[in-house]
Length: 111
Image (cartoon, rainbow, N blue to C red; front, side, top):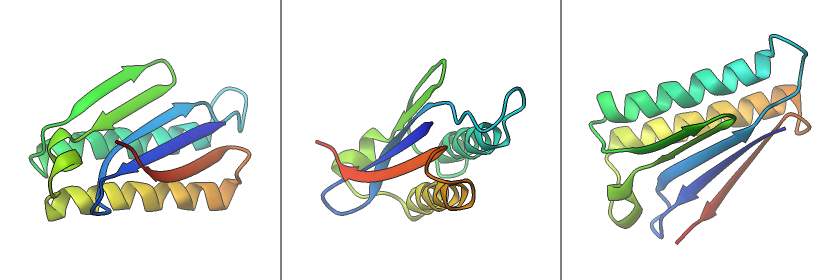
């Protein structure tokens, strides 16, 4: 199962996310894993190149973690917030389409 965790600051703005695991939807080419990977990697790249945000990114086998240090303690740019919300919405749509057995999404405040 894929677990997508989003972190928000005290103002309710998203400042990071962590996506871990494998969907296990299909043996071999897994469309759920591919969709989640495409959305999350595209968002990380767009936060840096389009929104101009400084990001801290950690990639390991089955894990992508992205943080926006400036947003964690301050206010996000409109573009950064829009990109993060678009990722959240996309992952919720994948979860709703394929089921919680494959993708789970959570949003929480993280100090």
